[in-house]
Image (tube, rainbow, N blue to C red):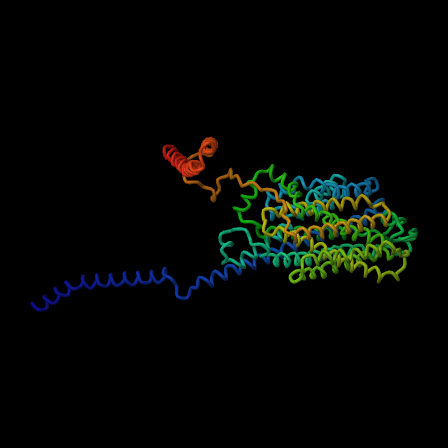
Length: 621
């Protein structure tokens, strides 16, 4: 019995020791698991994960380019399709008399077109401010909303709905296109940064080396042009679906038309004021406008959801912080750059040729000869040729940059000469093939000119991302002025219109040759200085080390006091250095060198003393 009791007592003595050992073993196991979980993983490859991250970033940039191109294409398909449908219906006398007898739709249409074409003239005054205030992405979204508003006003066709919406369209045209040009170029710059993320200048967010992102600009501008020009094709769907069966034949519409092409004055003189056999059903018009409204909202959603930001948040803060007065002045100051001045004739011709293709070529030559039933065919062929031939701008990846603009100008130059002597007879279908060939070639020239100008601007200012919005604003502002001139000359003789376009094209070619020659000689261009950002808002990037309980007013007062003290100290230092220099001139050269060396040593000491005093004052406060 005594031995049993002794064994029990021994077991009770060893039990705490075993429990403590088990607890220590469990702690060691948990610590080992934690170290294994928190320590470096054998399967984790940091370089591979970084490569995957920047690959996703590059795919996001491609998504942004496609989304902006598709959104712009849908928006302009809706806008041009609805405008064409509206103008044809309002032109028909029967529709006006039956639906709106006392409303005066012709007068409303004239004022509406005036609002669309005249308002962009003042676009240079507000476009940079809007883009800097809203941001590039939000400017595109706002402009798409204005186009959707224009579509919605067609549910209730009145003066107080159609004319204000047309004026709003005119206000939004220049900011929209300046934002699109800026956005596509910025995406090319971002793609370069994500593709070369290991480069030192990319990691430090320094300026891109010259010519580094040119190939991405060429590719992205070509993709945008290919997709956008399909808007001319889809814009003909409302007319072909709703009005195709309602249009009268050529014997009635063109009965009073005597001449076409180069021999006429105006658009189509003698065109019949009745073009519809019967009026389309109101329900069909409402359904068609509702479908267009849905696509307008779709373009807004694409810009809002699928398009990413063009700049980093800190970059947008910097862009706004240079002062609104400077933002207002900088587009005018950029005209000092001889590259922009010498490209201005090409900007103007770009506006001439696009609107002439829609009004002059398709109406005065095409509809006047083939009839209104062939209008959709001419515009579809023009849009397809513009879209397909925009791919040719990719040749700039291998060829010099002047090839694109020179090729488009050569094609248009030959066509303008041909059109000045081409006068087809009305109601003659034998001219259908020649007119389609001319339309295809005009689309070729348009594709090369449009894509060439946008690509050239992106290449010239690829390293100056803070100037892109100003440059594209000047381009599209001059283009809008040219469109307004085309609107004014609608009643002029056709040969006078063609002569003006021919002279503008020749001047544009000469100025472009002059610009390339001056660049080849390495002649310096004059760029306006962009002021450094003045950050009045203390964002997360601009927080200073100091008292966090300090109010903004106290900080601003202290900042003003510091600025005044620094200015006074700098003036005092400048006066002292001038006095020392004058004394040194009176002395011998050896003493002069010693004094100047002493003055140079004294300056950093004074500067360090001012910094120490400033830190001491902050500590006391």
